[in-house]
Image (cartoon, rainbow, N blue to C red):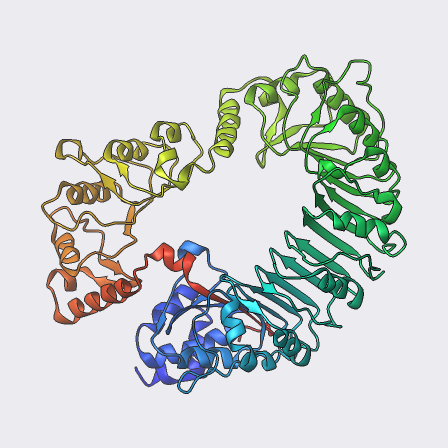
Length: 628
């Protein structure tokens, strides 16, 4: 049989009919199979491959799998990764906190990066350290993103290296960098400076005058030195500025004639000095501003404006003015303030198609605001209205019953769920419960961050809750309450505390997946173990997983427990399925295997979820689409 498993063509053919998880299980059979599948099957099977790295250990995963289902495999040396990477025609590469040296006496990885178009590294300190050996590989690089997690100074050599090596670079994104240098990179179309320091106004002049950028974003980036007026390149089409620096307002005002091609502008600046957008942005299509920069009359002069977002509330008079804009299709604001007067509340025809209000201030059916908006919707058949923050159940019912509620609306979308208006008007119990649960779910969507915000009784009221994660331990009483939830299918907690023998009565539950991070059931004498095993026995569809592995002894003890479910023929330890009989009989080979798995995990001190979420990551996209 082994001779067949060394035949590359045969193994490749077999893998055509296997899922990724099944292929992964096949790699566990022998090192020969692992080598063939890794190097000859996976390299052509997936357009996206994720290689997760911790020092010299690697994990390969198909990124199309949901996070909790990611299969994984270890490689104790770098040869496997070298083989994978060198054969892939990479177009996209993302590294996160990579610790591996790019060049070394024993660990050289000759990356095949000639086809690379997109590269992102979230730890720039490592990139800077190895840039001399690494950058020359990027001859076709188009998009580069670098983030500095520590104070890493970028000197002039970095930009010179970019200039020499990356002749096709069009997009550069620098995050948290510290530099006093910026060389002209003539191929750049887009430059994003996010939370950067050390740059001078002279650098800013080089960027906006010396490079013919189409897009420039300066997000909370500071500039030092003496400010001087300069001309901005007329090639600029998109500009995003978030700053406390009033010099940007002066600079944009100075460049009224140069910004004729500007189509999109985001401008968040504090201070009394306002920009007159109509003076330099006659061709603006998209405008995103804070209230300090908003002048309704000025926006009306922007004849080509299609989308406007104001990051604050506006007065009713300004709101009515904006409705008269001839080309505005989408308007997003937080709310309308100043009580609307009845004589002002006359609906008017508008070209607006999408109206977005973040805060709902029209909760009462007797308010003029409610009538005004509904009349506006009635008069403008193509207009839709959305509240970013959900209203109360009562207000939704009231609005649906309003005499001005448009007949064309057969459903109201609440939190992404479309609900029949008739059910809402009639206050059908099931519908009311659904709406209330949706609203409560949104309001409490962060309650699973820590146990300090956890209330078991409150969770029971969320009738459509399917998945719950609590980032701490909970009491046995709360745990028993959650088991009674009618729709909860997946529960993840750190541990259960204060369990007593008289409370440990198993009960039927709709739960399907129970995840405990810490194992506190490692002694056969403890009531916890009996309780959980009885729970598994009573609920045939329930599965249990401990995110942090137990001791070899405890695994043996659990497998021998009189309540251990007979339906379980295997126990999965660290991703490897092991026969229960072999565990009970303490076969030497099985015990060694389990012990090695546990020691391997302990060295990394990682749980399975940490495995999925916190590892250092390569994300790669290959340039071919064929499967086999």
